[in-house]
Image (cartoon, rainbow, N blue to C red; front, side, top):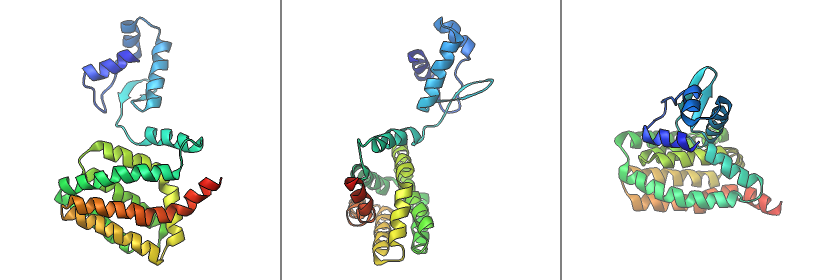
Length: 225
């Protein structure tokens, strides 16, 4: 596998590029095709390549699935809990939103305002509100121009989507959810105004005053279990 990693780096292969055939790799490396095939399966499991019958392995775009699996396994085996995820998200997203405020384009600003505007009309529709909430954070990640933030937020999305909806259903159409909405609007307003300090402060307040409240019963349940 080291050879394949070096080949990808040396040839500057990007998503969509194909690796050499199994036959060529087996001749180059002096190993059997089954050995090459097993190495390819391992690379596919890491998310680097995609395999299809009768076709050469293809480099694929990265997403948050692999990271989500790693963190999910930590949750499953008791090596981490929801509170740990919230603490990590808090640190990451405060920096992320400050960068979004510095770097956002006019298109970013318009789309963020559109999302948060629809959120205001969906306070009584928990599934849609939760979907828009996650969409907003993903859009903030894109506004940074740093693809790794998008990767991280995608991983978090896969982990917390169910918990987010459960929490929002609990608080739907209550003053608490309205408070969450107000904080989302503050975040977007600061990003649109290109005010990194205000954006970071609003995101910190979001986690400290709203999101943790919504998920507190879940965290407490994990602690009791």
